Amino acid sequence: MVNRFPSTVGDEVVSLRDAMDRLLADSFVGSPFRSLWSASPNTSRASLPLDVYATADEVVLIASVPGLGPDDIQLSVNQGTVTLSGRLPNVASSEEAKGATWYLHELPHGTFQRSLTLPIEVDANRADATFEHGILRVRLPKAEQARPRQIKVRVAGGTPDAITGGATPATNGTTDGTTVEAEQAQPAGATS
Image 1 (cartoon, one colour):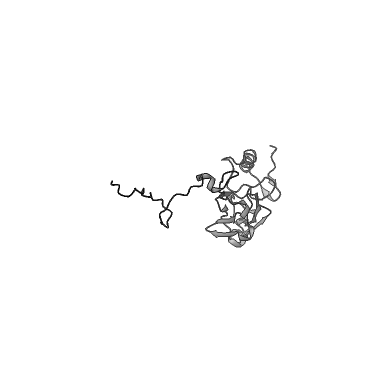
Image 2 (cartoon, rainbow, N blue to C red):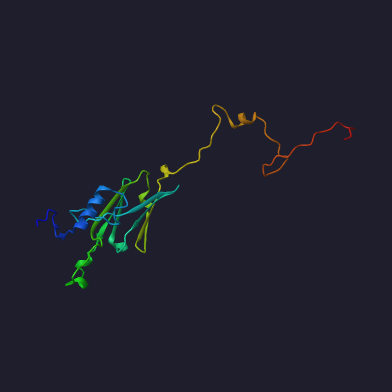
């Protein structure tokens, strides 16, 4: 019987199941069929899943990088584009796996790179990246011009006194700005 599907891609042996998984991953990008670390059919290049959100002060990027340490990840920010890259080791080429008979080899391996252009300007000089338990968390403070500002609304063409008609409420000497009703002066000899 003739095998119409190539059984190797480069140095990698490809099973029919792997080929179908890759076909689904390529066809339904971002769908539930996509694996955590999906590789393209012709390379061992892995994709990196990310979570990204913004608060009033910063943009936070979270990446799951199991099997790597903080020194295995390269992180750069250039003109609003964040790039994460690194290399996942192939356990099949480890010293303990030499001479082993493999029945299943699904763990991701190879290089990965993920770039994301942010819709918000950030201050890369104040960026902070932490790594804990296989999770990389990058905090990118928003650039000063990208932060929300409170703007005082005023009356067009007028001064603040135009709002109150020039009258200032009486405070009767209070220092906290509270308004106290002034007693009406009564004519001499009048009784209440």
